[in-house]
Length: 348
Ligand code: NAP
Ligand code: ZN
Image (cartoon, rainbow, N blue to C red; front, side):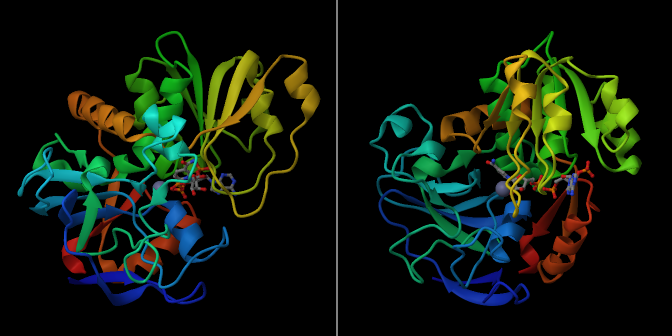
């Protein structure tokens, strides 16, 4: 079915209206009319080919919420009219050790991304949520239990929410943990809200002086402006866990120094240019670790959505029209967003 979308024809081209084709729903497919789609920094990295390997035309978007408009004959979990979400993945092999454990994001054959992933559908790669409609295997569709008026602010949970929830859970953050969240953007502001809801003592690290009060309002117990060495030093050797969401290359040593013995710094930001090699002595002498984490599996994404619905957690958003996506990208690059742009897909 012909569907209106927004995307780019090349790395140096603007985001413009384009027509795409969506497949007719197969037996296991759910067809979704997209209401809102969040703008993730990964969309910008991809559409501008900062990670290499972008296929064009590129239609980004993997923070999708909408309503089911058709289901295939074998679909049992969803019906027309249901409010649903789609995150970063639309497929995986379903047979490897990772998929068997519900960790589709670590599929040994490679998960199929919601955009820029391999598919038999034209044009040979997947096209994401900056569009009116999408067709997805029911195994990758999430149920949304929040109230309808919260839907725009629910969309960012599908990537920013799960990408911060999953490592907080994996490293057992909870009451008694001292947790740092670095970079108070789309991911980071969700990290602050979620770590706070899990009962941790939360310290927000920001480079932006003007986010000091905001970070407290999001749920941080303390806020550190990371450009200020004296403020950083006051927390030396005190953290169980630090989640770093920064989208740009920077020295990690300032953060590994803040970990306790056996503490872990988890990286989720994927900058265009690599971070400088970390100081190894900083790790060895206190058995500290640096680790990475990738989004979250489908079961855990549903768990996160239900946790957020129960606790009343949503993203702080600014809604934008589809014809203003490039302007939103420029503001995101300057850290000028509180805290996630969401496209009103009715404007597509
Ligand atoms: P974002 O909204 O742009 O937030 C990033 C934040 O990092 C900024 O708001 C800023 O916060 C801080 N920052 C930016 N440039 C900086 C610099 N030069 N030095 C220090 N801090 C800087 O981006 P996002 O959507 O949250 O995404 C963050 C990163 O995570 C991106 O690289 C994205 O691709 C990646 N990502 C990874 C996964 C995964 O599964 N691992 C999933 C989604 C996204 P302050 O103003 O507070 O300093
Ligand atoms: Zn994302």
